[in-house]
Length: 338
Image (cartoon, rainbow, N blue to C red):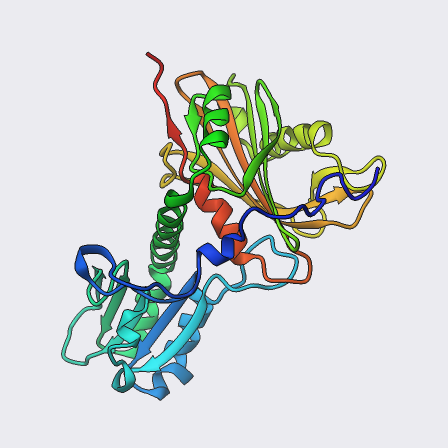
């Protein structure tokens, strides 16, 4: 078999990163100026340079610039920009994601304020006020997951709004025909393989590959939500349906160098799902990249569904491409049987 197997890079219909360009023109929501900023970009506003260079800045970097799990090379959760409050002029107030530090000895307890679309749209702003640097760090670390998830959810919603103008009706209808739900799949993706309970959807460019696997199996008991049961099920479908670029090769999941990390989440459209992040690879070849999957119960069909998204982009940053795929998985909508 030649390189026309798993990841033969066909001429792309569109380049998704172009759709998600760093700047917007015109007006945003409600007549506000359109916000600016590249994908997962976060502007940090401190009162002075000392705050940024000491424990406040160090804790912010630890939270928002932490390495993403499951990537072959280190990549941060967010691209962090920093500015002092004195320089926080109108142009910077147009940033989409903003985090403001405010140390005020007059306040007795730390306070978190969330605002949306204050200076531009769409826009998400957190302002954390605390009486001392120590109390600021304490509240930041206590609420770190909350802050990160809010910003990531905001990014996913923005990406889906961009995609909503270029949806691929053909692929969406194919998903609906096979399953009891749909995904907001944009133009550029296509169905590479489809069976009654499995679908492989791909987007190929000259440089990168993004893909989604949909796996549906009968639901029997809660033991199927265990990490190992989910991974074994995914690998079984990969082995039989996703061939690699060389004879005998096929897509698999790495459990040696980056062991997949699972957690239960409640913010998924199905309310409950098991999220797994890790590294996929090709058995008997040298390909791989990050993946994210969500496993949940389809109550309308009593089947266990796994949505598996992956990226292949050798020698380049992969965070933004994986966030695009993650956003598509988060768009799942069910079609209640009549």
